[in-house]
Image 1 (spheres, helix red, strand yellow):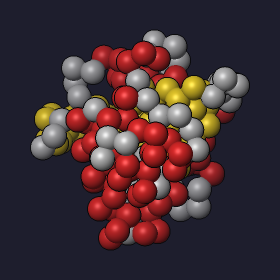
Image 2 (tube, rainbow, N blue to C red):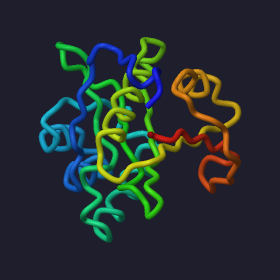
Image 3 (spheres, rainbow, N blue to C red):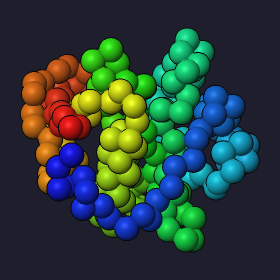
Length: 178
């Protein structure tokens, strides 16, 4: 593990699982029911078109891969005040090569406050502590300067590019956990 992983930010976020019931409520535009299912007050950011695409995808993933539940997208709650600042998680459990991919998104009302870096730090720590995880991946649009800056200092190296049918061109970054 590199010094970047060991130099952890003070823990200021916690992750709250979003069940299929909570995600279904979000797809139904029922923010109150979704929040009750999750046990935290979710924001309208969880009902954007991008978020709804994620909830549909994750509900299908849970139906076909029930064992992936603990790895998937979760609400991110910041600080002692318990404000939901976005969502983050993994795209699934480690694959056969021991790779996990991280995804995170910060509500625009809470950007530029260090939440993305804290999310990434916490998720890197989870990955490093999980048995069988040997590599962490992130994919980022070449135009997303904020996310490119967020991963700086974590030891990620660009290993390629890919075309995502939703997001377009993405740069693929990986870091080994050893």
